[in-house]
Length: 271
Image 1 (spheres, one colour):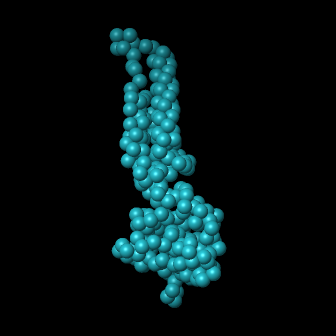
Image 2 (image 1 turned 45 degrees about the vertical axis):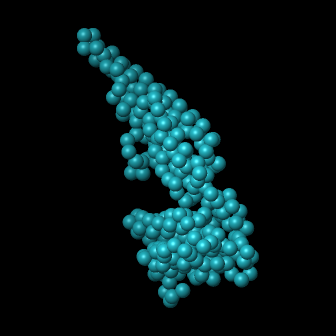
Image 3 (image 1 turned 180 degrees about the vertical axis):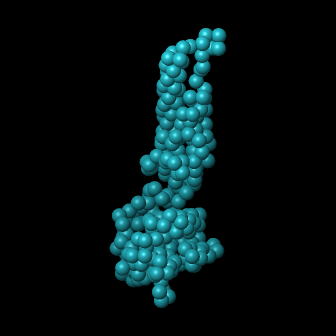
């Protein structure tokens, strides 16, 4: 490690020829990503490696990092670089993504971490092998439902009071219809997931700028799916809202299994 730098860790994987055979990977600030094996006290037959790159100490020591993480622009750039490395690695082999901003003093600390957590890493990699993460979000378009509500006939005008009550009833009926459609869609998604997925992770509902497209996000789940099942899983989900009005399903992936790789904090530190 060069002077004035720390070691940023992206992910853990089993060492394999595919990690070395493809082109070079660049990480944060364009630094080359390397593979660090465990230290000499580890079981060398385990074949674990961590993907790492050098990062400037001035930006990633503990105090500076806390300040930078309050800067949304800086954080977004970091996250994009972090996830780009993981996706490139995941295209080659099964990986365990590490949390954003996992930083060590040097590669020796990374080697020690691999040795200390070897059993946990191996167990989780075995579980994730041959699987990918798929994101599934369900949306309800209440505005569509309300706009589709029936209006009084012009031949039978209503008094202002009755017109107001009619409108309120129509809104409530629309909400009820939307809720029932969402429940039916959710049941269909659950049935599809039982046929194809082996694990589910629930995430927070997305609101505001995080929500994509029209409608209110009512469920935001990730599924661990065998790679061979991905085409059928995606195709069946695209039909999950057939015949239902005002609901839609957004399917993303395949991704590295971020939602299913969670382990206790590996203890990365710049101090």
